[in-house]
Amino acid sequence: MHPVGPLPASTYWRRRGVLLAVLVVVLLLLKSCVGGGSPAKTSSTTPAPTPTVSRSASPRPTTTGTSPPVAAGGVCADGALKLAVTTDATTYPVGASPHFTLTVTNTSSAPCTRDLGSKAVSLRVISGTARTWDSDDCAPGNGTAPTRLAPGAPKQAAALTWSGTRSQPGCPTPRSPATAGTYQVSGTVGTLTSPRVVFHFR
Image 1 (cartoon, rainbow, N blue to C red):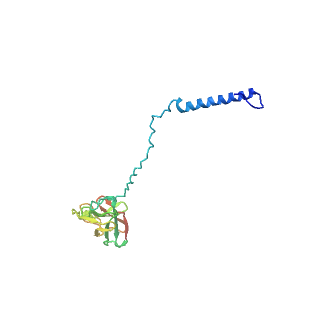
Image 2: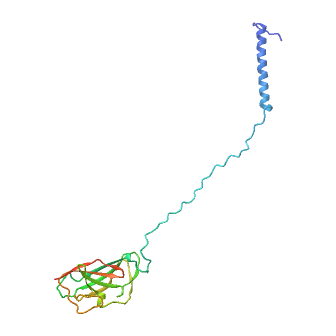
């Protein structure tokens, strides 16, 4: 109990006091850690689940093709037809009988049907703005002829020879011959009219 050493006794007692104080602090810390503290609170909040991204199949693009002007086998629309007239010569002597041919072409991608009967088809000749001749003047047609037109294949609709004389509706007589000059011929199918073709009488 009595300090032994070269230093004064008070020095040894101070060291023992410091050591005792440290020991007391350590014991208090151990007690608080082992059983003195309140139990740790556990969180009652359930963590939100991580959202999963479901990849839905993308809708397939709808391809819209260009449909033909008519259904296969249906009636040919006006926009699907191309009309053309040809002559057997470009210049004739006065009094000659020019021969005209009218063709119809189905320009769509599907076959279709059109009436090419005498009631629907006609040819007309003009000179300038004056009406010279029409195939219906003296031979009006009343026939029907539904005709199947394949795509891209020209079909003959009419082949007529003009006598070279003028005419009027009802075919009044006498009929005078067409004089020398420049003329134009065109063909019709229903409400469609072909481009005009120029020819001459000399």
